[in-house]
Image (tube, rainbow, N blue to C red; front, side, top):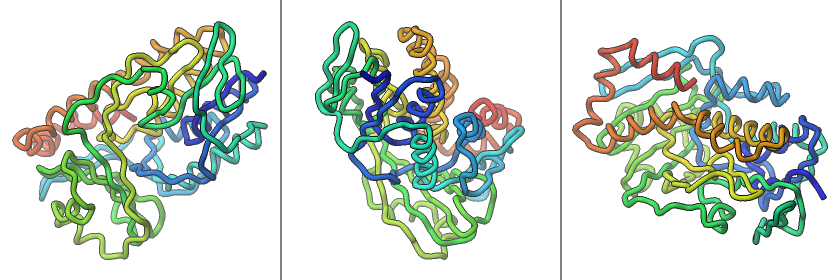
Length: 338
């Protein structure tokens, strides 16, 4: 019998397996897809995410250094550099490959397949034909494990969706740019010397090119060809009853998700994976619920406030002018999230 079975081999699941191996626990990951796995993702790592990768022993991830966050709406803009070390724009596939190789190097086994039914008792949990002491569910935004355990809460109507595509063009800035319109937001992340990713978030269900047309200045900057297909995700908001169910712990997007607006998804996935394993390694699984709440509190508060503003076109138009007029406030918000 192994110590930790991990459902999902994305960044959150691989990070959990790496943390487990570093803690002296035997970990097995179950994932139906072959590495590296791509996904609709903003691909900007906040400084805390870069630090978390180093703590996992994941070094030399190639990408594009990020100096901060810039908001734009027409000719109005506001920007805030990161404090200390910067962030990193990195292709999702590059990040996944680095985590995958690190996990294999530590002796983590990766099984191809789906988790399927989860059965547990007071001492063990069994899934995918494997019995373990604990199961960490890191199987994504629409987690089948979470759903099978009855941990989903009803969703709300008019959810937000994300679409992402890459363009072969040299980055014009070292900042992550967030372009605002009354239809939604466009996130521009440099991920290489000649490659940028553009992710669009909106409540409106339209094609990518129709969304991009709402940002004419940005569209004019994308003079290079599109180099990847459009990938989508959503609805983004996922409400969860709790993150611990017997011998199962939820991490990453599977633990509940508010929105991608502040770009912390990967950093929070790495952080929650580490917290879950620490709770298991110290024999305090029930403590994970509080640890998750503490790690995500600032994200939930700030993202919730921005979502409330973005919900109405009238208030959405005030976000960038307000940030521009109050630079210390904008900088404080960015520093709280980094």
